[in-house]
Image 1 (cartoon, helix red, strand yellow):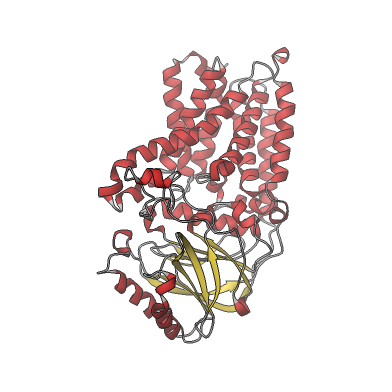
Image 2 (cartoon, rainbow, N blue to C red):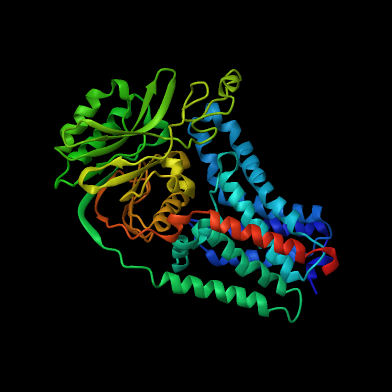
Length: 498
C-alpha cells in the first residue's frame, strides 16, 4: 500500500519540491550522490500516489523546480557583477530558469502516468520519459544540460560509463536503478525486477569502471595561466593592465614549458588593434606557442575568439565560439530588447556576439590537434561530438568569474571532466579565476589551481586513449533505445492492463 495516497495533495507537492532540493546535493561541490539516489527512490511513491495526469505533472514540476533551484542557485551571481544594470533580473532568472527547465520533467510525469500496468512498470516508464526529457533539455532551444543527473557520479568509478553510454545513457541507468525500486516500496512482493535492474546497473558500472585502460603521460609540459581577475574589475582601465602584466609574468617564468594557455578574453584589447599586446606576450613566451582568448570584430559582427601564436609569435590559428550563452553573450531579438535597456551581460552591443561557423580543430604543433572549447561550449557533449576529426586533446578556456565562488565554477569543472571521459581525451582547462586544471582521459584532475588564486601550473599532458564507444556513436543509440522502450511501455500501461 502506498502511504502517500492518503496525504493531501498540497503536502505531496511540497514534499516533491523538498526531495528535488535534496537530490541536488549530489551535484558539485557537495557531491553527495547518495542524496540523489535516496531522493529518486522516494520520488516514485509520490508519483504513483497521483490520481490524474495533471497532478502527476505538478509533482514532477515541483520536484524538478526544487532540484534546479538548488542546483542552479549560482545563476544569480552574474547579475551582481554590474548590479546597477542587472541585479533586478536575478530573482526572475532563478525562478524562470528553474521553473522553465522543470517543464521538461513535468511533461515526462504527465506522459508516464498511465492507468494500466504494474506500479513497477509505471516507474520504469517514468524513468524512460524523464530520460527522454533530459535529452530534449540538452538540445531544444540551443539546449541547457547543466545539472544533468549523470553529473552526480563524477567522483566515482560509475562515471567511467560515460565512455560507453554518454551523459544521457548514464542518467537513464541512474533513473532505472532507483525509480522502480521506489515503486516496489509501495507493493509487497514486487522487489525482484527492481532489484535486478539496480544490481545490473551496479555490475555494469563496476565492471566497466575497473577495466578502463591505464593513462600514460607524454613528454610535453603545458602551462595553464590563471590571472584571477574579478569580473567587476576585469575591464576596468585601472585594473586591466595589472591583470595583463600578471599573465605576462606567469608566461615568462622558468623553466620553459612546451605550450602556454591563457584563459577566455584574457587580452584587454580587440584583436584588430592588439598587436602591441601580442608582441609583449610573444616576448614573454620566449619561443613557446600560446593559446589565448580575445575578442574580435569583423565589420558589424563581434566574436568571442581563441587564437594560437606560434613559436615566432605569429598568429597561426583562429577559432570563434559558436555555441553562445543566451542572455549572456547575446539576447534574442537583441536590437529590439536594447531599446528597453536589456543587453547580454557580456556585451552592451545590440544583439551581442555572433556565432562562429562551428566546431573546429586547431593545430598545436608538436602537441597535435586541439579541439577548442570556449567556456559554455564544454557543457555540451554535442559540441565535442561535432568536431570534424579526432583531436589529440580538448582545450577549454573560460572566464568563470561570472559564476561566483559557490557552486557554479565547480559544476562547470565537472562537465569538463565528463567530456574528457566521453572522448577518452585529456583536457587542458585555463580559467580566469579558476579552477584551472589538467584533466586526464579518465576525467581525473592530474593537477589544478584552486578557485580564486592567481598563478599558473605546469603539468605534463596525458596521452589520449583509444576512441571510446560513445565518441563513435554519440547519443543516437541511447535515444533510439529509449524511444523503442517508450513504445513498448506505452502499450504495457494501457487501461486494459490495469
